[in-house]
Length: 395
Length: 106
Image: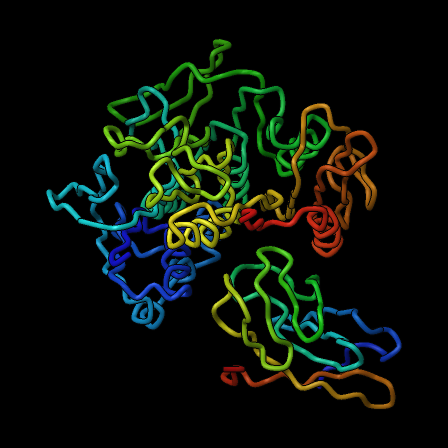
């Protein structure tokens, strides 16, 4: 393999490039990114970056020294718009075609939008440019902020806006925020975090549209007929994988690029990692899996077959209103949950936090902690010890 | 020189956070005492809450790992070292001598 092209200058794209070099690939390495920035870390965008506690230079995932070592050709600010049927050429938006022997797809996901959201004051939060625009608006005096969606991005953004002194309301279509991720008991704890901080929480209703004046948003219309006044609206209703550019390629796409447990697509010299990959039937948008998948994917790419597979314990964290929430495991809807350390106070975490276990038939399936990082780490290791994350194929 | 705790209050495998600015973490790694900056250089997390194994501590948030002897990261996502600080025990009382601001472990 003489040339490998990584499409997506993202967290997982960078990890893939590093892995290629770490495994001794000394050929031509191209990294294509639709943003103009070198790879940066996205989790702080809704947290410390938004509040101004952390500066932009803290987001960078590489520096000049590492990039010199990596010896890659960076094609930034250019979108890939196609992959030929054999996976041997990447077509770029600027008209160029890059011939390649191997491809790592790391194009990530884009924030889901709502109809009529192209108004001044309406934001999504996924990229650095989006975060910059939102931050600028949030530092220009007190605003009435409506956050659509009570998931991780929504809750963290609401928390950051509240910390900046804005008047914040979260609108969540489900009866509680984070219900699918955490189940009703722990979702209620997260609802209490909003309530304690004085953030309004409107649940069980969707959004019907926006109110506007001269192209600037003035409010959010709810599907129950109510209306919330707003100067700033943030849409945090999930993300869709960036697969549009693969239309016409030989790859199967269904809410992500379909690949096996080893991140290998139907074309052996094309692998997919990160938010865009549906590996072994599951697509995860977790930071940790975006850093773990490239190891296995690149190994398989260079081997020309699925030599190793990955099944690591899903892990995510979220910082909301000064509380650090950590979860690891595979929760099913029927799992029960009980607090085994610490306690609740008025529906929310008590001082010192708590640790809860999700269980199924007497076995722990997941662990959730609020402000108990050490205890969480121990439980996460116990849960993970039952499974060997990287399995070598039997041959 | 900042007093930390009594030697008997920091058994092997344990760590303690000192609320200096910036905060410092003191570890008892198999009988040896080490002090490093408490905040992970990757993102805001307390290394005193981390997982201690030999002379390495793993960050509880993203599993970056640091060598307590040098402060150097041993794996991603951390790329910058934490500062190390000198530890002294005087009459069974643990103290740390904070490294000067400009004195990095690298």
